[in-house]
Image (spheres, rainbow, N blue to C red):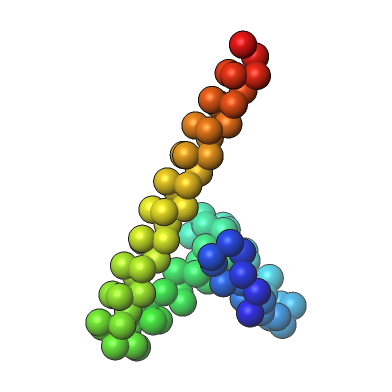
Length: 89
């Protein structure tokens, strides 16, 4: 399983006609990207099938990771802006 930052990357292969049907349904009927629908379906499956405490713990850790990622991005932008202002002085 590959990662994208802290996220996990899953790759699936679908039969061509059912894959096309899924993509069309997601985009045209539900108005969402197919990958977003897959992600939501997986999260819902986990919520319904795994231990509630384990799922809630995972959700809380994911939120902490996301919040830290946002904080790092904000600090990086602020630092970049400061460096640019110093260089332009």
